[in-house]
Image 1 (tube, rainbow, N blue to C red):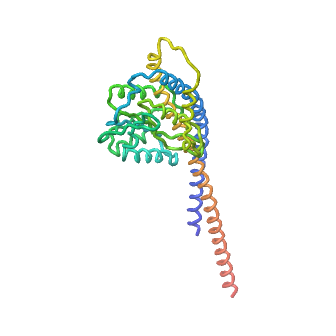
Image 2 (cartoon, rainbow, N blue to C red; image 1 turned 45 degrees about the vertical axis):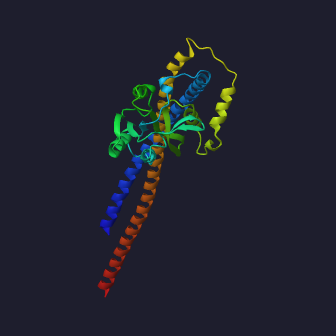
Image 3 (cartoon, helix red, strand yellow; image 1 turned 30 degrees about the vertical axis):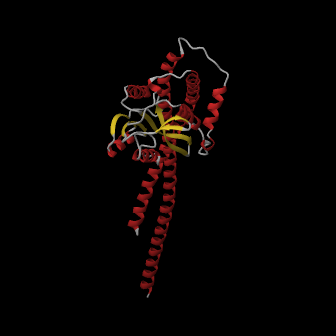
Length: 328
């Protein structure tokens, strides 16, 4: 019995040390989450205003620009945003599972929306390439046999725009050269500390519909209003807005400058949303681990007390038996 109590005491110390680690990791993740969420929220206004400006320009002047060109999809590029490390609950598995489901039958995400009620269907087989942001996404692409165009895993806990610029430049250059017919970003949208949603959104060609849908969903809860098509309502308001701007030198040059910035903004916003989601998921996972460790310590303590009590009872019984034997 003494051996059993020693084993239980050692187990209690081990679980207690694990609980201290998970509690510390929870506090660190909470601090990083606050910074990441603040960064994501601070960029949403800029992203929304950039979209509004693009809508106004595109409505008043339909131009044939490379980043607006819509063509049947034969080759698809997916920018997959995951984390470099684990211990963040279902964060990575959720976005990887969502991406794997979409790429299993890529015709759905390869459909090009021309208007809200019309779409350009893909033609023939569709080849899929992947850009991995985070080691987990890169490992997924290699494991599933997709061609990994590039891998980025040196981002800080709070990424900045300079981290995203090389990725955006690579995407824009490849699309302009017609190496890809469509580019989508797979990221985890931050809703709240306890809710994150995996999403795939079109980046190129720049689509007014997908921009509207992406920015409307930023910061919304799970009770999305997509059923009522709020995007259609907002776009109708924009169409009738009596606002007219004067551009120098002209609208085409303004659009040529704005469109790459808009691609950078979309990628940057997706990275920030994923960072906030990752830290939130890790904080929740570490909190659950700490709670589970506490429950385990309580159970082990109860088992230890029972074992010790049984040992004491046995010793008393042996002493009593010895005394009775000697007296007889």
